[in-house]
Length: 292
Image 1: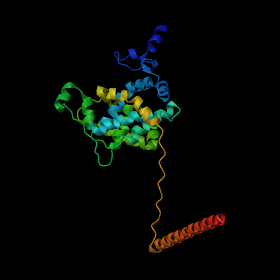
Image 2: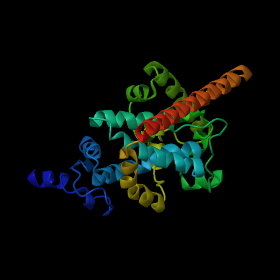
Image 3: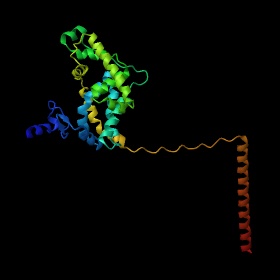
Image 4: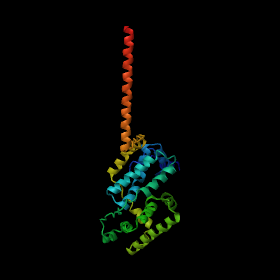
């Protein structure tokens, strides 16, 4: 039993064929403690962020590109999601809060801008090839493209991100019964479509979708995300300079105001002239008295 426990707690860096998951992340049943890694992110620890990223990068990538493709918008949405995780860690206190914030951003902020349609990912398989290979997961993805944007999001939250209907409802601020009803409708449509395509009944949606989860983000995206960690922190921590108050412009007066100002200037000049004359006369009188 001790030997088995030791295997469960080996550093994550040795798992998944040597693929880096974070040297100090605890592993439980071949999975690290998610809350412990999120706690590291709250402490602005790059290694903790790297561990979390390596664990969820495929899920987040598929969640986004299976709705919007791998073009400029899909890439921007992917980057902004991970930046949000880093930046929101500066203001939140618990792993639970950070996780919920991450799901909320993924479900609400990463959505279609006005007018942009979901992108259908091309397939290299023809129907007869799929039937010959028995790769029914590709058929499932073809039918998945026909779901509405809302149905896709609900389905991916459950089958890709791996959270419950209750968690989806909390992340999207939608009633749980609404989630259950619309998610059930999406799953029913997919089951019927797969049945009509000739897929054996023994293949469940869960199994078919699990077989499709082999797509990962490009290695160049991975490097850019990890390398951006410190930059995102610095950008978020820089104090914002207070904006200079706008100078109030003096209201432009009418003709009467301008004439009044001119009269006041003339009076001031005459008054100053009179003062200079009095000063000069007093000096002359003083000089005369001294001369005598």
